[in-house]
Image 1 (cartoon, rainbow, N blue to C red):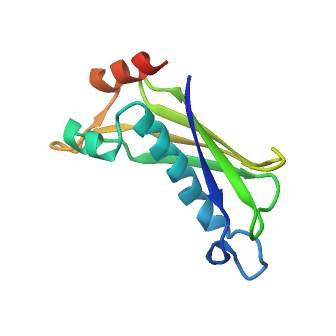
Image 2: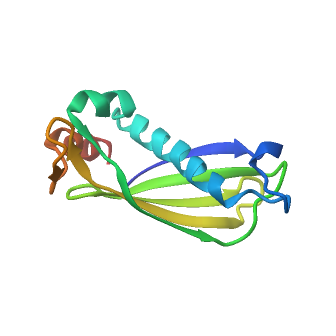
Length: 135
C-alpha cells in the first residue's frame, strides 16, 4: 500500500494544562499525514474538489499509547489500506528520535457526490487508478 510521513515538532501551544499534548490535537497531526499521502498520489484537496466528490471522515479511532511532550519531535505515518468502496487510512505516531510508538489510529472516509450530496458506494475510477499507479 501507499504511505507518506510527516515530521512534526511539538510546540507549547499543542499542550494541555498537564503539559502533554492535548488529545484534540491528534486529529490535526493525522490530517497533516493524510494530506501528504494524498499529495503523493496527486490527489490533494484541490484535485478532490475538482473531481466532483468529497470524502468526509465518518469514523476515527485513536489509541493513545504514550503521552507526547513539549519539544518532542514526532513522525506520523499514514498508510492507505482500503480504497475501492471506502478509504481507510491507518496511522502510527512514533518518537522521531527513538522510534517508540506513541499513538495508533485509523480513519474511514466515504465518497459523496458534491452535486447531489448522495453517498456513493464505490470510489470513483479516477481515484482508484491514481492509487493503483502509485502502488
